[in-house]
Length: 118
Image 1 (tube, rainbow, N blue to C red):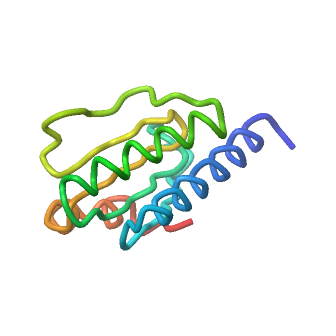
Image 2 (spheres, rainbow, N blue to C red):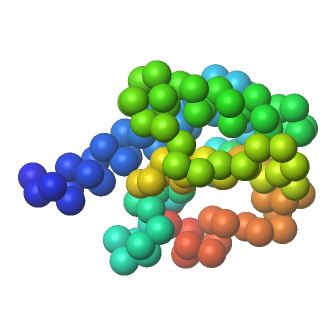
């Protein structure tokens, strides 16, 4: 297995773990999206819907904490405070998007990436 294949496998493992963490906290309509290798953004997007602002923040905090404890990976960037209904957690090869329903409907990230579900 090449180093690129190993990186992608680790990214998939992390993305699936983020889905599990979101599910633990009752996120809705979760999606795992494999990005094209040429994207240059990340290997995977995780997209989840929160049902309120407090739920959105609880999901983000839980995922960030669990990834740090289980993968020893810290978020590279993320938003705190006024998030406008969308929190992004950047773990380099995996980017987690947690949105309120109206924001998710408006931006439809799944369709922007050609519906490339993993």
